[in-house]
Length: 347
Image 1 (spheres, rainbow, N blue to C red):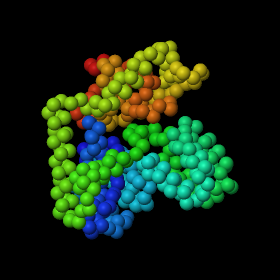
Image 2 (cartoon, rainbow, N blue to C red):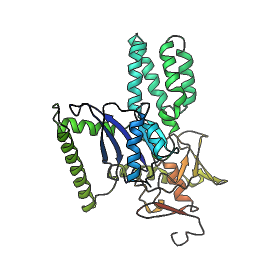
Image 3 (cartoon, rainbow, N blue to C red):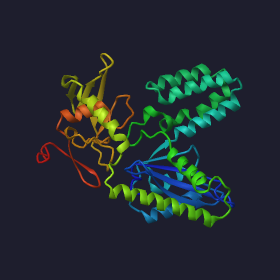
Image 4 (cartoon, rainbow, N blue to C red):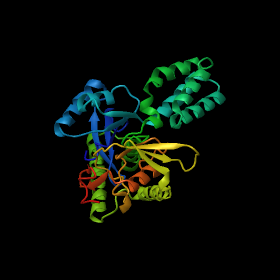
């Protein structure tokens, strides 16, 4: 559970044993973009109280564990149970893949004209990723409130009041850019396809044996990466470098500081300005810019208003390169933030 203070995905699957026990998976991503897993067998009747007992037992093992964000399917009890045990300040995200699948099922049952179903789904897809989210959502509900009343009622009841759980534009907080828990789905598929070879399994002991093999293989892979000094997050290093290079190209005169904020002029849209604010969160984060001019820029040091949903946009690269009010020094566990006067030794 070492990286669970960033984002924890919770998902369950069935069909792994004769007794219909559910297999609950708690899934986190390590510094090599690999999945670290905790498998838990649950009875076939999983409810809020069962999960509270489970998470309470887990909390006893790791009493000081911090969890920032939890992503779940759109079920009624998993997050509520986790939240009641680990604290009320945990952010909740819905897996957008499961949300879209739920919408598709409801469209099939409530909208009988296939051409309209496709049109509605296309509009819903745009709404999820829309920059002007509120306007697009209002137009959608107004346009289809009469023609497809049943689906409109379903959408208003289940999703309109919980926009922050599924809308991409409202997820601008640390680790909020993750949109699906398909790490869990991939792990379920690996168990059933690779280890069970899509054969029906009857025995619990055989299931446990397979899970132990998965854990052994994952541990050996991680150990090999550490021993061979494999760079963490190697697949995303190129993306961060590209953002840094684009940030360098922004003219210094296009960045203006005022009242502790930074206004960065858009490079593509005339008279448009993005705002960056220093938030100064302390978080062990492996998603950093390694360029020396950026002083270990981390995605948690700034809030920004731009539409780039990646962790490190070009605007905060530029702000971090230009201004020295925020200084960082990195330890193995977290990033510490010092003021200008306390960080002269680092400068």
